[in-house]
Image (tube, rainbow, N blue to C red; front, side, top):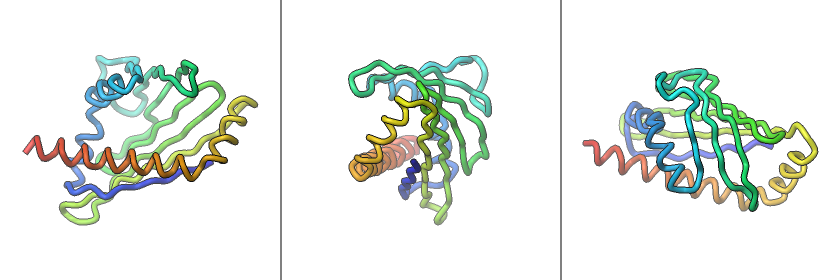
Length: 155
């Protein structure tokens, strides 16, 4: 099952890339939302091969995932893969300069089930696809506004 969302951000491409690759801030932000994200090798700069161990709650159950950065093309894209309990989620974040001061951030990801419980989860997601897409787009819009605010503060 494939999802694709995007948001136009009023900022230069390089500035947006710097904000979305500030992984320390992202980890702290996730913690405030109840998600524990811990980089496996924090002493090494984030690059292809970087890994995070993530703990979160979903549908009333504690879950764990391993997220790995599989590719990086600074400042245009980053690709990750996530593995959790029979569910693989490859994800790509792309940045495209629409103008000197506007950047389009796109996120593409796919849910791939590798066992029966994960297939059931994907099936329930298919049934709620419209609602999920609206929530994802609202979250992406909120993220875009947050990025714009952080860039404005830095100036």
